[in-house]
Length: 244
Image 1 (cartoon, helix red, strand yellow):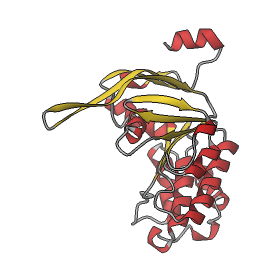
Image 2 (spheres, helix red, strand yellow):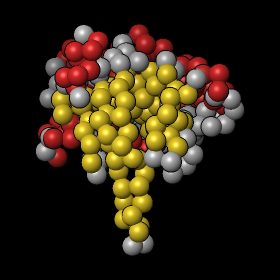
Image 3 (cartoon, helix red, strand yellow):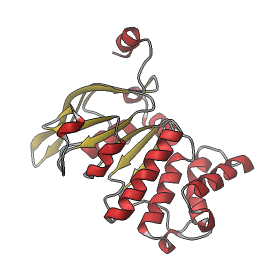
């Protein structure tokens, strides 16, 4: 499929899903979450994924990150056949190429704010003074230059999510996956966090896929998709009104 796409438009997309299906066994019955989903996402594109709880949104992010594997079909990211890689190779790919923003921040409580930012760099063997400076500079860009020595529990929810955004970007990933990044924040803080996330990903040219129930997030999107009955369907912006 990748070869056909490259021939048709002259440039391969960053992400290609080729007939992806994912099923689980539940109480002796087979439950299909995704059924032969095929689509592509361009480099530098921001995509919002909508859908009811249990529709498969987080499952799709787990497949794109290589945390989980599909029942059938193939996933290509940056010309790499993710579904053909070993578990170890997928782990290395995830560390180098993907940044995560979670609903509940997932900061390491025993590490300072700056140490949380340095962790993705250290996992990739980047421990030079210049790498540390990248983290320091990014902390300033998210408005927390004076909080590097603080621990996460000393920060507000909005501040913790700012740290999480910086951590997702510090190792210069190709792809940012955001799973309900404002789901644990009040409306005013959510707006600020979305604005920051959108600004930083655009400025750095990142591709971002965001799972959300927030109508405000739709404004960030280049394209909007809805997961319904195992299918991923692109939605015109005008059709997306209120809660998905």
